[in-house]
Length: 374
Image 1 (cartoon, rainbow, N blue to C red):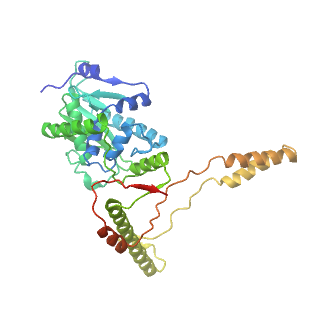
Image 2 (cartoon, rainbow, N blue to C red):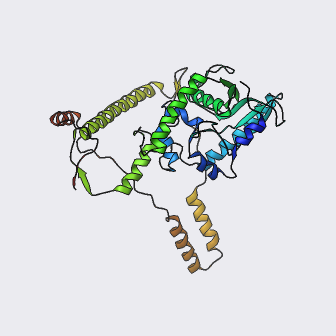
Image 3 (cartoon, rainbow, N blue to C red):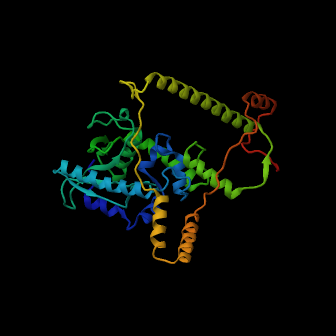
């Protein structure tokens, strides 16, 4: 099958002047980079996080806003693509920022290609491959030798989706920089069978969770935790639920996990102390571990800076004005207050007691408890 020309592809491309407008459009469907997440195959993002992003809920999104991190990601993307262009002078590489390419037949699916490599700079030049620039410090075991298609599964799904969205591309090459080193390349070739499976699953997920009013299952992610805390604040009511089998079962599960975590942490601390006791001042054991001080953290002593600033201004003002300046600076320093946070305090911590209570209760199909006055 022949690949599209640059002119044909760019006529389908939606371009946006700002990141905000681009993000707003992204919320209208599913991106190829989100296919692995909704299928539970992405170690960085969850289905709940995708759902939260589509509902413009920044509290529950997996990647909480971080302007510095985002800016660095954009800067490094430009560097990766420039490096790729220098390594492949036979191709004409065109970068696309704040652009969305809808699937030609599935309106709910889109791609956001970082760049496309064409045969030449002509509008009639055909697509050679898609290029996706990434910074990834995940375990090296997830990657095979550069030049192979051995990449993390989230990238396999993304590449398969992008090849179909372009309609069609023979491959999607991931140019990946790891730990700040020059980027290496891993090509993911078009896989129509995998793409068909992803389209079927994605179409169903979109209908249930984006067109419909269903919400993905709670998944233990930080984003899900933030969402539940915000919802708890908004829906707060002074009642307690009557115990049900479901509530007791979940509390038993929680307390058992907490007990195991405490025991494991104690074992870790004990073993580490015994290892350190054997060192007698050494910095570790060759090939096994190190135990040494990190470098001193050199930074600004803000308290000292404040006192110096106050003294400087006090020398140029009357004593009364200096006192007023002191009060103003102190008032400004305490304007931001720490918001309250939720804390889980179990009333029953014994797993034996919880097990006995659970066995005395009739199983109930409902996941909700009945409310009683607090």
